[in-house]
Image (cartoon, rainbow, N blue to C red):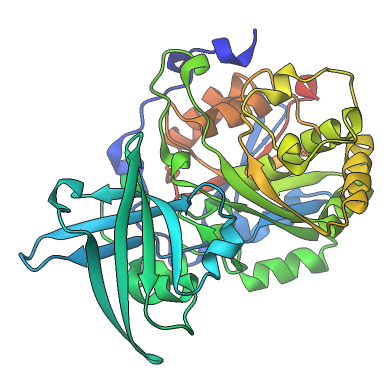
Length: 411
């Protein structure tokens, strides 16, 4: 069956409200860890994860950093309009948008849009560099979101710096609470570096500097990639089949050195820490396939669309061959960094090309993240989730997690 014909009703389960972790544990690495391998389930905590990994393993982490994407503007009437920055407007690359000075355009959600009658919303910011006046102008609306132009009167501020002073860190809507001071640390991984996400790569929240050191001492290697998590990650599948679901598109940023590391690591285990890391490395495989099949392709041509992994010619191209082709394409185009979009959908019917396993939290029912888990371990996803429900695991972003090895038959 083509994944477009999958029915989302087959990927749901009952998640009691009290099982949603609304706050993190005091110690990041004492979260429970469920280990699944070929139908067998065992339990431990993240602090001991190295004992469950082969010595020659490469862990791939997403080093994206959550930005203060919610900006609240208060009108003279006392009412509040919230602007939620989703991604730069069409034609603007994310990294460039974050370092923009004076002005920048973003695609945003607007809470209270009906109350926005004037041309500009204004917000005065008192910062260590002085007072800054931030303005927001609504340019156009399409499909429920708005193109907003932000402008400010201080030439020394980048947009990223402005967000630190003007914005609020966005928490997932299912936490059903306001952002608190502790979230500014705990809703970031300890290795977060590249600003641009509106949600954390939550599998990485369990890792501490000490745990990363212990992994290194145990012979476990690590590699960082970047996928900037979009708000679409929380979007439930509302259509009956996946054919009608539009998979969200996100920015990936990966270096030639990282791709070379992946190439050289195979066939030894590569484990993705989080669904975003998995989406990144599997997208890189398909970009390599495109580069191999069409050496004259542009970067836009290489971007991975929703159904590419199922519709491209299936020639059993090995991962090392695809990665080598992508590296050669980058060399021909004098690129040391790939910065582009991916819309890859990993669902049952997908065969992992690079990853051997994933470290991941427990995800919402009816979500593309749950489809990804089912792609790895098949129908055993129900067995894993039922075990977690029966044994006191905490769910979603601040909850516990799992180490899931792909089933042999999906290799």
